[in-house]
Length: 326
Image (cartoon, rainbow, N blue to C red; front, top):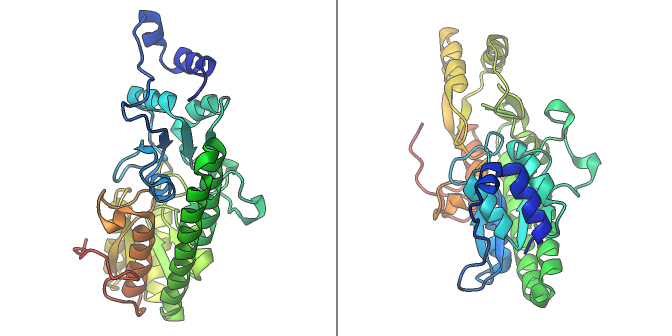
């Protein structure tokens, strides 16, 4: 549990009205006595569930379809963070609107940025001189983040280390197989069509790991503006290369992609929307796509199929849902 001094500092900075009014903030654990692990994003929460099983209560702050770039912590989030025994967040400024809160919590123990220990030389550049935070798009990098999560949990609860490490070993092996599927799926796409066009620049690690050229209309953060010049540049690329498909994203408005499709049509080239990809958030809770492995299986399969590759109808695990065309 985070120390009393850290709790008071957090409350004094981020909940001043509550402090001034003398109201109470409940920070006790649930009645079942399980340690509480708070994860910011679905990608982190899903891996944590695989590592700890039923031993922890997992609290995921950002729900289905939530954009972490724009997410602002609520009062309930602050209370959950204060109650936590372990806090896991992405880092690399993904949770930009939460960074002040996370930095303050970082003065206490058991608060971990799961990507901040990745070697600088393997990170890609991002906006405002920060590294690109979308490292989960490369399964090998997220495998390293998984090991970081496991180490954090084992450090906090050494009595469970053996069980957590056994689960980590099984999960790392499965992630290695997923990575191999992604490579095979992208290799099946004709070379001239290995270009992925999306709304915002979340897929650079995906492109580097799996051999695709990535062209996005917006920058790394969804706060960045997409100008008419950039839309025209993308339209020129689509028409010149006769690309068959572009892609929308589940957590980003589709307006700019629709504008690109219309622009290509006005120049005599019909480009379809090849599907909806998961970029900054998992699929629906309770679905296969609502897991990290399901998210990447969906993305690999959807991209390969739309760009002319050969993949199983329902993906690597034969578990993908039927996706209506956007």
